[in-house]
Length: 377
Image (cartoon, rainbow, N blue to C red; front, top):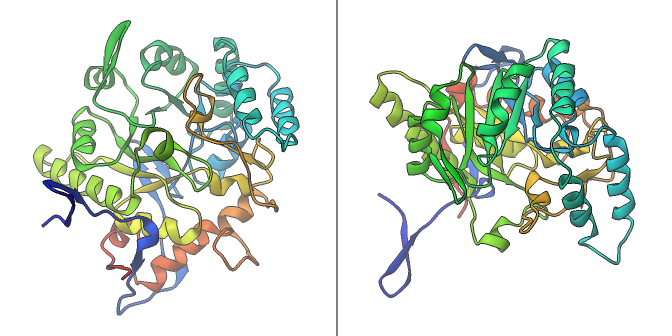
């Protein structure tokens, strides 16, 4: 039964929970971390880590996409980002770092990003960025917005993209545009030979609609991070991640029954700041997590300590700030696997996930999704 709260005469709202509101319950069995697998597979592509990068230029360059792939995750390039618009991205990043020094004007960084993204997308630059990833041998993934999916996808596939991510702050099965044909995701996906991951969503119904389009994966959330994303302030829209993930997992279960066995992966994007949040997201039913802000601590991140999401560059209604990351930097491998001297869960993100699974007695991700949960009082 849904937990409804009366918020005024004749109006009720559902109570929802974020990852901070829940805890994982230990079981009667424990096991060695060496006996735990964090592998998952989407379509024909297997990954040793349930890690997909949030597609922002702050943390993903062609080089870091390769590094993430070599470490077992999936790096996702932003096909509408700086590497698709500027031949010298280092100069663009230098402009951002200079703007970050202007403490008198907190909007300066967003204005610079908006200006940088006003440059047209150049297919030669986009193709070259994808080529760098493809030639390394890791899986090639790129993100497009619903507005530009139909326009850019043929060139992305021709360049070698193997997994397509169609992502917006909020996405639906049909994206209606004033001066163009609506993007019908079911028709769009049906004409492609590559798996499509689509999102973000925040509720059961929208997740089910996206699953019925033929998407191989559904993104839950919109990359929310404290102090970074401002979608709740700008649009009044928020996604309490624990409830949103569990609802999407329920849609996956019902869709599995509806289709007689077609499994759609759930990817959690947002609300994860430390390793315990990653464990909780998997425990709620996610197959993998999309990490953004936690990866800004990597010395390999192209933002060099700055972090933002793609929504920061919206020309008229930005929904992300550009913020300074942590005052330390570690290499990507250490960030993901340790060792760590940090006791707050910011380093050794996936070593901690393995330990959480081992401490609760589960051997793989699918089993760990069945772990017990409690809600804080």
